[in-house]
Length: 114
Length: 116
Image (cartoon, rainbow over all chains, first blue to last red; front, side):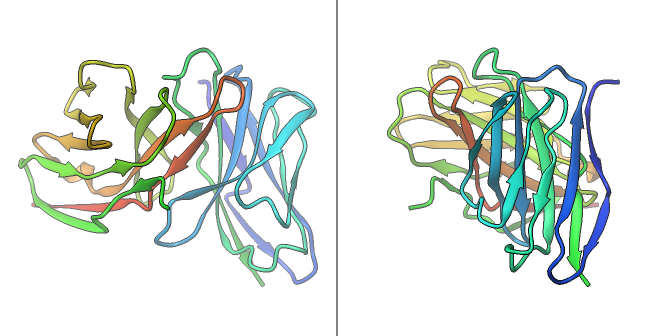
């Protein structure tokens, strides 16, 4: 079945460590997105990419980095500069064929600080 | 100012009753889209329904319908005949931006609990 795969499901980070969250899609979607969700809040956009080798900052990009070397993959690195990384991270993708196309989401990664 | 406002942090509804989840939005764009997503406790986001700003009729998808009042900038989700499986967080989101640079902005959500 087509879908979005995020891994790992749970991730623990030590102080000063960079960690990378994986996101892979086989929906042939052009656009991919990373969101952060904190308890009691909605989703906030970190980075997004509409085409390979190009990406844009979202509303809360500081302390994060991404790459888009392949259409299917959009990994997110949480760097040591992100001082409060504990959150639920969701990856999404969408077609650009018309404005009514919804974003499809992965199952998320829960990141915690050790 | 909040672009998407969901004023109901939590709601309790009796099984089989209808429920309306409120969503108001703020935009100066003429072309935009409104989405509703369901998030069960497991965390995944499930797309429910979409309404485009130029759509003249309210969107419907099975038990879900969208009460779209453009002049009031509201896009309320109506769930008919609620079921225990409807218990979840519900998020309203708005798509803005030109083609190739579109983003979704989410509200803070409403936690819906269905009572047997």
